[in-house]
Image 1 (cartoon, rainbow, N blue to C red):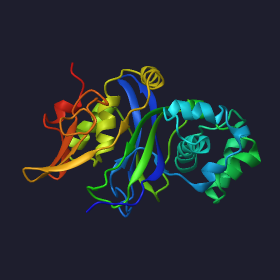
Image 2 (image 1 turned 90 degrees about the vertical axis):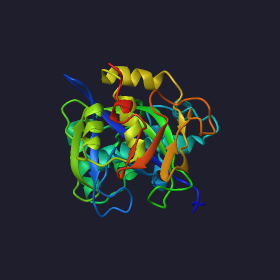
Image 3 (image 1 turned 135 degrees about the horizontal axis):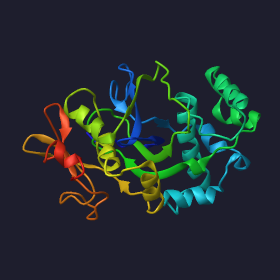
Image 4 (image 1 turned 180 degrees about the vertical axis):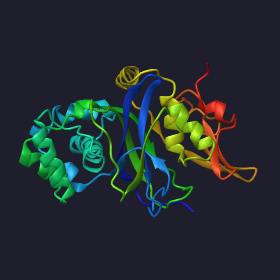
Length: 287
């Protein structure tokens, strides 16, 4: 059955760091009791909070109009554009301890973490401590709107994916509430672990890792993100020979003929997981 309710605005941040073997991305294993993707490995993120829309523009390092332009959505309300950036920063800092806000002294950042752990709102905390929001650390990467015909959860999301480089000298931590494991992984290795059954991934994470795996450094990924308009990805589902198939822009069965990325344009649910037609090799860059 179709889900007719509007998708919920949300933000996801793919936090990156360089390693000797290429860029690594931060993934969190969601708590097994979670109603959305329980037990799966995901990128930090979550739904837009009403307070995200109420941020004082004076706390922003960029005007809201520039944030809207970075998202490549000219018709987007400026408060929503700012709120989506704020939501990404909030999830990275408030939930995972990554300080993507402010160039203040460490004491101010520690105070912010303590207030957030005590349950104080993200915006009031930053306002009280005068911590500016470093939206320039974020580079919009893609926009995903989940299908009306879901593969699992009945919730639909309209999610903007961002890239961000982890600040030097910081380590992410999970809270044992929303997430139970922290994993830094080379994108290609994450796909291999998925193929071997070591971790579980949803289609947006599968396809995003496939794209990240094609770059050799954080700098090249950030440059790519800032050089193009983030693609809109609205997966379209159908049944083929008894299998559930999800296709993406550029696939012969998709309503949008222009590709959103290199690599496979569809995943089929078989062997209790989503797979491209060419197997694992189809998800990895060609040597």
